[in-house]
Image (cartoon, rainbow over all chains, first blue to last red; front, side, top):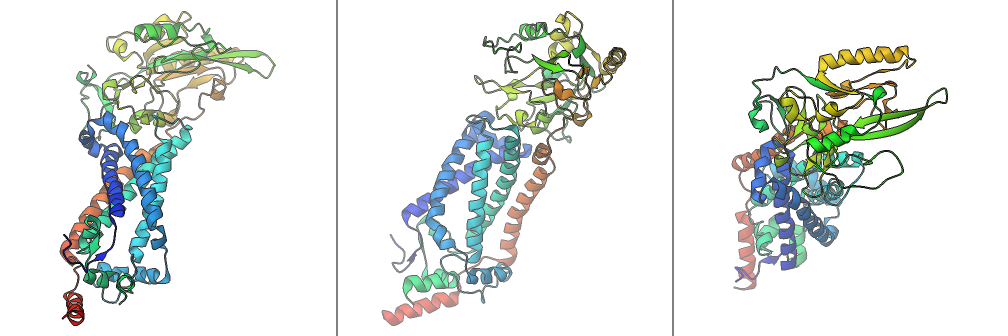
Length: 206
Length: 302
């Protein structure tokens, strides 16, 4: 049942499912990865059936995330090209964070911050996938220097990626009316008009 | 079991703020001294090692060289490496080195291991794997500057020389030492072994090996397996024994202070978000815009 037939469709079912495959695999990867990142998180291995199972399953979930992420990347890449308006938005991002978003420039489907997040996560994912292959001893046996480099990059970029996703999730919680776009795909017209006015004009013709 | 030994001075993935039981941390440091110049390459040490430790490696193939097996494996914790070297006078020297775990004072394997207690260091200097805690990630291999630990493909656990920690614990020397027919392998306190080495080095120098010396690399804090080498200035002649081994800077970066700092940073991002929410409040859709849209609806569809 649609609450208001005039709500705007932001994501179709396939895009949402794709996002949740990425999201769930990310959560599992973050929890299992943190377990090996610092001993303080080692007890998280119990969520996966013990430390040995954690070591076994983590890379396979990584493969799932890499594939699902690649699909979502190809889907949304063309909507995330940076423009002059995005740079203007980024220059004023501090006001937005301060809770004062009255004079932000009109944004299309994604604002400058979302686009920066998109490209940063894509870059992180690339680094995580390549470095992860380097240290996946069950299947590969690379030169020791590559393995050491892989271990450093995987740990550092992994931590960065968790921080970025925290910001991503928090932004969705902070901007009210956003999360439903990822649950059932629609947003209200008022939400769109306030946060993504150019996109609002484009889809409503107003 | 080792956990009862109460002389564990370091434990993998364990903060120094929560040390392992170490009431007997005063124990004498031990060392195995391998005098390369008196080794005859009989491989008796390899046999004694698999006999005492009760491990049976697969019978391999002849690779056309004396090295057999050609490399350390999860079931061959020590191997003799044979290198042919031509000295300045054109004479052949057969440099035979018994390879295996060096039991570093600053062990790269222990530093890298993510599993609490899977690698421990005893007060006597022995670095030992606690295989039941091993999770098979191979980080010890990544951390070792001597390329020693091996993952067993059957149980995916890492294995290496224990310096016969079980024998040493009851006052016996390691099995390779016990069996060595020429006395090329000796065992005792590290101080005593240095004295023995000093005599040997002096002797070798008198016999024309001007660069003879003791291999006790300080880059890893010294080791509890030491070599007397005729060419101590060029250890790499001995089948690639590293000249200045140290824990790789990449490993130090990976396992150093950056991880606790990153952990704190992640906590700060999480808490920062929470406090942003409670200080700045949520970003709601403004009532003004909602009313605007309601008005438009009424105008088009009164």
